[in-house]
Amino acid sequence: MADYDVIVIGGGPGGYVCAIRCAQLGLKTACVEGRETLGGTCLNVGCIPSKALLHATHSLHEAEHNFATMGLKGKSPSVDWKQMLSYKDDVIGQNTKGIEFLFKKNKIDWLKGWGSIPAAGQVKVGDEVHNAKNIVIATGSEASSLPGVEIDEKVVVTSTGALELGKIPKKLVVIGAGVIGLEMGSVYARLGAEVTVVEFLDHITPGMDAEVARSFQKLLKKQGLDFILGAAVQKVDATKTKAKVTYKLRKDDSEATLEADTVLVATGRKPFTDGLGLDALGVEVLPRGQIKTDAHWATNVKGVYAIGDAIEGPMLAHKAEDEGMAVAEVIAGKHGHVNYDVIPGVIYTAPEVASVGKTEEQLKEEGRAYKVGKFSFMGNARAKAVFQGEGFVKLLADKDTDRILGAHIIGPAAGDLIHEVCVAMEFGASAQDLALTCHAHPTYSEAVREAALACGDGAIHA
Ligand code: FAD
Ligand code: NAI
Image (tube, rainbow, N blue to C red):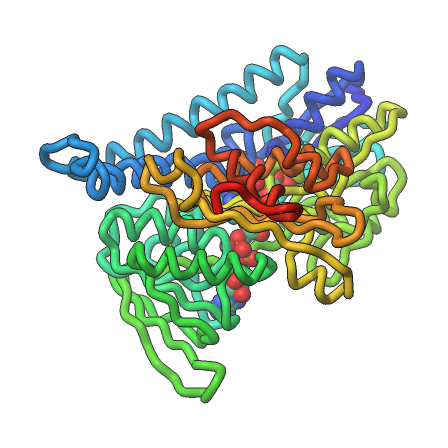
């Protein structure tokens, strides 16, 4: 039996980052993880494997569509699916082993197994009970199911099954036009599958700036994804090799069906807290399953904290990581802080879509006076040279003070470009601050500067 200053339950981006920061701050730390490898959903069955498949299939798309134009002639590559999956698994392995190395380097004990909290100050793993002055719950989330839909992870799959299908489906039906549906839908569309996305709402990607969502949908349609919007899925009937999806159109209640080899259910995720013993411990849980925490990630039980997907807020790896670092600092007696107003969101399709801060719809709802600076990648030389002239940067700034309120980018490297705006927002910058900053030519980031110029006297290349 060992005594710890902190035991973190869960070794995902929230948990492992928290454990590392605790150790760096001089706290004796252990992390409990039940999976065979560290890294949680993100490294094992989420962010990392999906990005590997997105990269591989984007490369295929480039070879098929753009190589000949650049004078690179010859047969397009054929797809060796098994090899693509094995490349993806190698990428996962490199990353999860990296976390194991960091644990050793920082002298963090990995307690292997599933943890529970029999009492405040105690964590049970297998038959052993460990004492801990502080416990951080970072147990993440799992895919939520849909009534009338049984997941078998072979024909009817969540993202986990979609990352290791036995073969590339001819017809894929995706339920839910959110982040997972569109990323994985793009992967299989590029691999030649006929992809139909069925979405309950009348638009894709809820919460996204509506103008960006409309452009995004148009671009995805051009890439071959088909959309059925305003459709409530009623049930999925599956055999060992096929499935039939029945949905009802909300506008007229008419029912229709779709046949598929594979159905991906991507209708959101829910916190995973099974087996922790939260009920017996008396930890307050919100109606949608999230652990209730205060502004310092403390639950109502003294010495028990919670972070990441298991609590409220966007289910994003970097949000979990930031909370992991901040709660470690709180436990060490410092001032941990997360600025929830500046958490970027990125969809790693091609083009990428990225956003931070307020959408135009939110600003209208708040009755706020704002201005819009927009710049199309068509006016960006670098983007045009690499066949990525579609898309735009949209910057939202306060009408009177010029302070940046939000940014929405659809275009090349949007997921990287957004961080320039994040830093600007952290410093309370105005659009003019961005516009006055010299940006190297030719870079995609010039489009961000041009959008900032468009908030003032006008973009140059528009
Ligand atoms: P998790 O990563 O879920 O980790 C929790 C860990 O706790 C798990 O390993 C679990 O095994 C372990 N655990 C649970 N209960 C116990 C217990 N009782 N005892 C021991 N261990 C336990 N986010 C992004 O920001 N960018 C992306 O590109 C992105 N892509 C994604 C793609 C997919 C397909 C999916 C599904 C998610 C993606 N996400 C992405 C979301 C991201 O994975 C999560 O937001 C992030 O992993 C949350 O981190 P976490 O530490 O809170 O939980
Ligand atoms: P999501 O919340 O992004 O999208 C779910 C979609 O399903 C919504 O559009 C919703 O309206 C729709 N839906 C819900 N019920 C439905 C029904 N019965 N019929 C049809 N449509 C229905 O959830 P998703 O895509 O499953 O992703 C889960 C989480 O994982 C997200 O919160 C996201 O933050 C995270 N993630 C992040 C990624 C990134 O940052 N790039 C990549 C993948 C996942």
